[in-house]
Image (cartoon, rainbow over all chains, first blue to last red; front, side):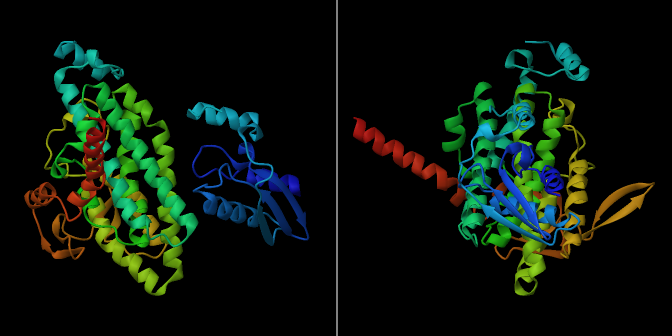
Length: 101
Length: 315
């Protein structure tokens, strides 16, 4: 099931950049028990102006998955996000958009 | 410099123009004019949005508001930077022009006083900016500008998201919050509709289209805007004075009020019972609105003050 949840979050785009949250490397972990999903995620900056939107999108997308009745999100800052956490696909997406990563 | 005929050929072939050497003086003049409108619009949106963003209802909302303002300043910078490459003096353009000679849509001269009005601006004015810049990004014959807009489009999308998310949220909360949202839409919707300028039947000739500085006419851009804003407002339960009609199998968005009509900027109120003429609109635009001088002064005053003291201390 968690594999399915990772796939679901790979459909959630960052509100500011053309890259999804999984490829951006901000999703640190997903666990599920009895329909309660717990997500650890971070933001690329502490002053992320899109943080509310991201939380909303993650919650909304996971609740659309069969078997999910509750979503708990923990915003974590350890380890701090760096561009090294991006996947190869994320790097390619941002580079073709014109961002050096 | 190419001859008029050579240049005409380049434009018709769809090739991009890359430097002033490849332009005729007429093209250069029209390109500069279009860039000044774009730069001024982005620049003035910063003080206009800032005066309302101060009233954000949460820290995160304030951060979003400030991030949008930062984006707008960056977009202005793109336009002014290109103008500089084309021989204009950026400092003079921004800091030495009379407030009335700035070329941005009249809508920004009407004060945004609340967070609600700010998010409607993000939902409607930024949608207008998105249509105008999207068209330039798609069609513009000047390469450096076309490419400079790559990131701008993604950022404008973020502004729209802020506008739409908050409009939906406020509408859903109902009561006096929703009434306030409806009042904001009531005066801001028609201001956005006139953003796109004269209707095509009054504007017989467009040099901008001829030079492929843009690809869509005023009415086509206005239709594009209506086709995104009207359904969204209806979806979230907000009334707008426009509807869709199907003619010859094509969707057409029609306004439910005389366009143009009389506007009281101080009261932020349209009088749909008083049809007006475009000559009157042009007079109102040229005279500028309530906040023009204050907003331009917001960045010009400090610049000159700093210049003066800096000079004194240095000599």
